Image 1 (tube, one colour):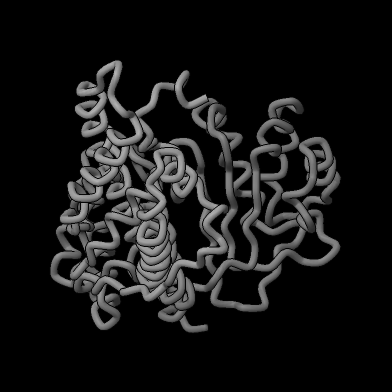
Image 2 (cartoon, one colour):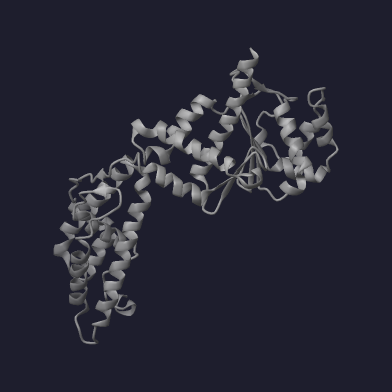
Length: 370
């Protein structure tokens, strides 16, 4: 390999590290900060990941592989900083060599891990790192190894870029296919810019700021709203006994509403499945819609309960409450990311709330219902 080619592979290794960091940013929890080249190659303050990339597809992780020993030695050297971390990961494109100490590494207990690495015969390549590990306190070493995982045979840079970044769920669900590569390049630029603008050269990515920029960059490339998938599901009268909302209607003597209610419920359920299959990112919006319906109907129920008197017909009042509920939410056909929602959907999702017992359409008191 020429010096120029060798330099290129090293640069690719750094770019691979940024790819891993970008994926972590896509999946990070609220309030997280992602660090590069600080507390490991990639860190979120609880997990430290060393990222090793090789252009040699035949590379094996052997007992004296420098990537492992250097990583472990570095953690030991900075043990006071790392002692409260939950996990250490060696992310490598290399494959664990059969019959090496790393075979089934993640299944070993901490004691077995410790025995295996101490039994390794050192060489000149790992001598300094090995000696640092061997001199470390045995109990602390075991506790560290208990948290140490090896992710072997990871995708190479080109595969990682295509499959795990361009093909990531948050990208697929938000960005038009023709724009995904350009969008990912924009996000790479954002990650690099955090180092350029860093204070004291600490390469830090604040996830809240990252998400704001993700949304800002995505506006240019967003997928068009999903056209509501219409369902033609029909009610099977023989299956009505399987539904809790049907029993609710029977309890208030509103049998004539069972057929239309079953149709609305089944069609809404099928449409929701189709929407999630088409675009998984809509799950949160759909859940929020169900919660909004619940809140509206529970507030309406309070007003109906306030109108009850001791001598009134609670079944008749419950039927009126049900009708008012259907009328009130039938026009609520706006969900972010979806167009042309049919009225049966909010009606069916109201019945879904009844089905999972977050709403009871029966206005009778618990004592009366028994």
